[in-house]
Image (cartoon, rainbow, N blue to C red; front, side, top):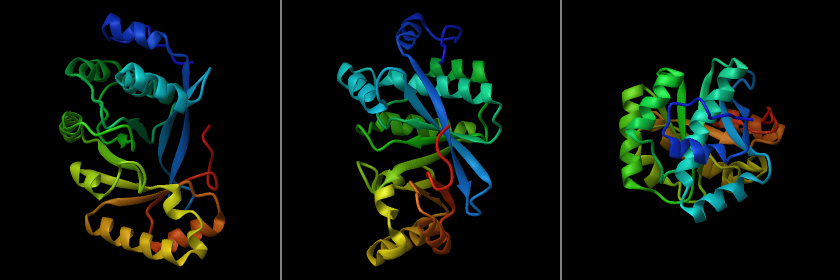
Amino acid sequence: MIYYNDLPLDNEILKALGELNIDYVFQPIFEADGKTIFAREALMRPADKTVTELIEEYTKLGKLHILEVATFFGAMQAYQLRGYECRISLNSFPSEYFTLAEQRAFAEYYGKMDGLGIIEILEYPYISEEAVEAKREATARQSLWIAIDDFGVGINNMDVVEMYDTKIVKLDRHVISGIDHEPEKQENVKKLVQEFHSRKMMVLAEGVEEKEEFEYLVRLGIDLFQGYYLARPA
């Protein structure tokens, strides 16, 4: 389990974090050879409910910011305890952002993230202009990357890609599933790869579950891969 007691945060936040009973697992993101790990995505695992249930509960309570703080501080704690050295991808709600005090606390506790962190913008619940600007400033200042998660579902579309200084676009499982035998998906993904590469962005296929999908996506020029075919979260 993740423990927040020693973090340099104010008492109100620490109390709220202390009410969480969560851990983190990591799913590798691979380069196109299917062997070289490019990064590891941190995934929250509550002990007493599903992630969806936890997020729904905190959304109704207006406490998504607590989960945002929990993810960044908690996932980094688990990452360092495991001794990982590759990039870490941290999920972030498009409606939330760190206060300056929280940014300073994170830097004080974990050190600089220059060239190490990927901030993965989730496809829900809604976009806050203040959060977009705060993340643009923070990522530029700390040489962090922005990834757009689940492109093609929820709110994450081309407009969202253009809001940030996006480095990676993650194509949702629904976009690539069965692509080896579905011509319509083949044409769609081919156009997306060409478009994002023209903008100097990397394209990641997520939810790759079949050998045939992986091999076809490699031929299309996809840069990065994530899914059960290559590795499960652990």
